[in-house]
Image (cartoon, rainbow, N blue to C red; front, side, top):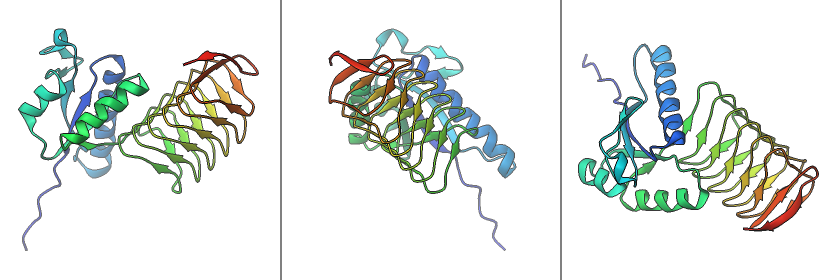
Length: 230
């Protein structure tokens, strides 16, 4: 009987070699460790390193991973075949720009979920999104593409996070909420049940949203009130 070869790890490039990028690479490594324990040695990812627009970082070894240069320089080195990427860029608009460039080159957005994250079977997580340690995504929740859900965040039942949203550490999204495309919740911010944060709106750290935040508006406080337009 012919023995089938073990499935090869996917090749993964992290876009962004800053602090967030090191967290993405760390979570990918943690996923590898968990997979090796569960499968007897098979890793999920071959972590290729970073792409970053900062020319001063090219060639640097950052916490064990090399910076290959810009996205275009990494493409010249690796091509497009069987290359996955994760966009570790904190600015939502900048993350959208680099993700679009990478996808146009033929790279595949990969989802990184730390082994400690709890994700309900009926939740949906879009391609390219990131779930940090200690996150909880409850039944019926829908997470879009290239969403960052940072450490110890909870996303309540039937809530929706649209594409390119970012939820900072410790934030709480209650059941039935909606965060529009490019929305941002600061650390320890909270949304009341069924609250709506419209596209590109910003909820400041430690703020509490009772009902709705208008598009491209920054709110702060408890309860949160508008302090300016983005």
